[in-house]
Length: 195
Image (cartoon, rainbow, N blue to C red; front, side, top):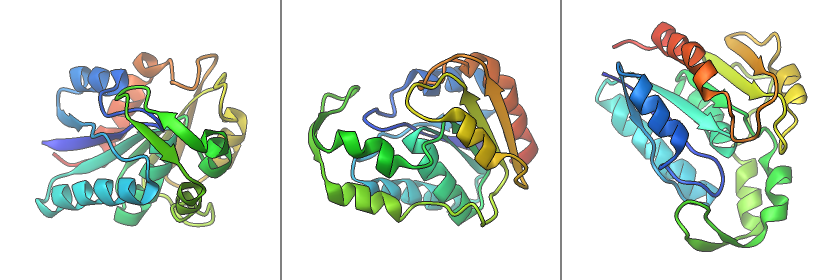
């Protein structure tokens, strides 16, 4: 059975409504959604370990990321050439997350931690240059995202090989259109994964 690895956004956890929804709707796929560290290097190392473990068993794998999780998904998808789905992707999390420097509390787990300048520096290591090719990619955008610039994101991905962009009017940063986006996600996975 093919696997969809769902990568949550900043200050969240693997126990998300989106992951639960996808698990209930994508019967032909194993949907996994781990909680990863706020430290970018530890997060990427953990996610990469999961990817290598899955692919070493010759299992088909795709990545779906939300916001910061989409930033990681794009990096890892390119690195391992895996199909990816990006929901309201953070393309410049260093700027977006600068206001989060200092003491934080994870919204889902309650964990208290400090987000340091060194974490922002670490995020820069996982940036994806637009001049490089992307694996099969589906970008899903809520155009009323209150945190990220959806129109700019749509422009950046427009006309890129292997990339399809689907925009939904309204919505929010949490991506309110997951139900409407389900057929696009299922089609993307079915076209780009082998059982």
